[in-house]
Image 1: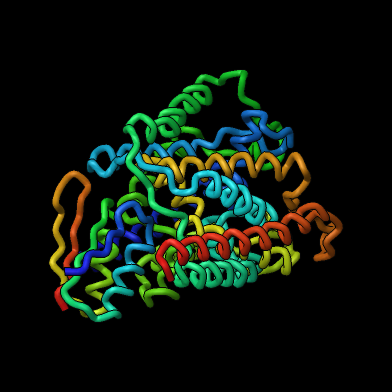
Image 2: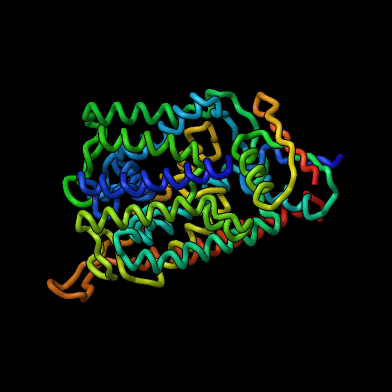
Length: 368
Length: 69
């Protein structure tokens, strides 16, 4: 069973790596075949939760990931509505994780896709992500817990998955209630059906394998277990080979699509994402997949991501892609904002407060 | 027999509690979980670390793992 499960994680990584490049070739933004943070942000924009005109589009990839997991968990009878494990704290953690992701410009999934395409900023950012996971793991080892979940009525867990079907119907019918960017990343997208079908497949596989970007490093540190990490390795290897074949590999700090080269903020942004993801029990993609299985705590976390992404654009916290003087590596614009840098510092402080408080609460409850 | 009630806890907490109980050395002990993911993860942890277990799917989302040594 053990080997079979590890192969399933690796297979999910292989499909994710290939789908990430394919969706980019078919129209998604550069090195953004799949990105949970960017795509939730785009969806938030399409619903007018923020007004940034270049990042508004209902991403079928998000819909498909949740639905793929939902359908598989219904089929395998793993669907179970549950929740009540510090829901508002999870919402806040989701919000903070999104700030870190949009300062870096990507979730852990996009981080590995960027790494695969040779973006050295993502390789530098990986330092922060791993450090964040390591910090979170220390707190988990010391007893950090958001508390137990409780069984809920089945209907409760199906609300967000069923809403995805409504959202897809609106997208497919060209509803005028939704905004679609006319330029920028929001205007770039693969064919809707291709995005949806690939995402449903990935969502089902991800639920079967339990792939998790943060969990990979967490289990390595805490249990010396490489099992989940093979997913990340597979994404990078397959993504890199595919990028080289289609001539999209650019081994450089500069001229990377939808990326900036401020190394310190790439590291700190992803430190937030790694730290917060471990406290939440999974990376942003895992939260979407768990949402499909009826986990209402994860659904609330996803709502935290969405609201967080809207605030990131409403308050000018999100970074912009580097702009260059023509024909040079001289950066003339883009990068982090002053508000974004302050938000990252506040986010790190808040994560430490939450981690310390919940570790102490748990120790007190356990009488230690 | 000592029982570790890990029901309702999300990963990696059930694995961590199993690990702590195993390190305390009072075999056999029983771990209860109510989700397939920790059920699989605890079995993997046991296999990776040489523990002998008896894992039972009791149905209705109730799982029991007995660490015998």
